Length: 242
Image (tube, rainbow, N blue to C red; front, top):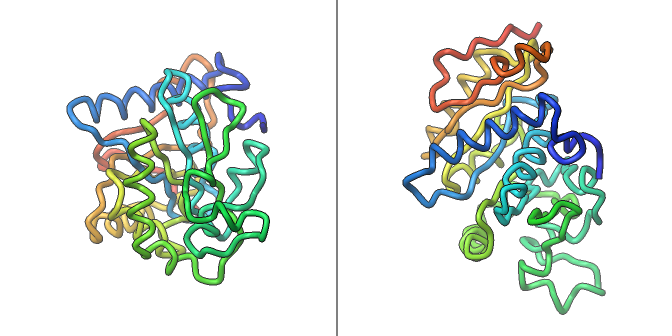
């Protein structure tokens, strides 16, 4: 497992505390509901959505929640590398039915694609083989059935999905999950792109729960004020990327 899972590798670090704060905010947001399925996306590549996904999932696992990451970035999925697990078969293989011969007898049960990580209570379904048509796979009837089936097994399900201004994958899944989180990067994310991402998700019927501001340079004494998460984006003003 790579050191970027900081909540596990360095639990006393400022970064780990911020992920625990994010976890708490999500718990308060869901205090009176059964919402448990979310996507983590970004506006464009390079903002750290996979890093945030892995650490948020690990933070939930540490409080005895049974957590599943589904790496739905079928073009450039990297959760398998973060957790040092086999890359295939994964979600693309299940949706397409294309698997290695050795896995043929198990291909029709999504539970067979779940891998256990080194972190207690944390599991992963990798992105799998790179398909020619990721978006088309996500709109299949199988996707909704996956969520329904796995929601009976796990307390929290987090989809790591591609940037929503690059491909439509995030928008397809945003309609099927309870809420979406957008990852932005300090000195990189453009405000107009962030607003466009939020509007795109809402236009397809998804709910944006908030924004995680990533890659913030901070001192230890001030780190608690360097993390934004909330239900509104009106106070979020990142510097412009040139």
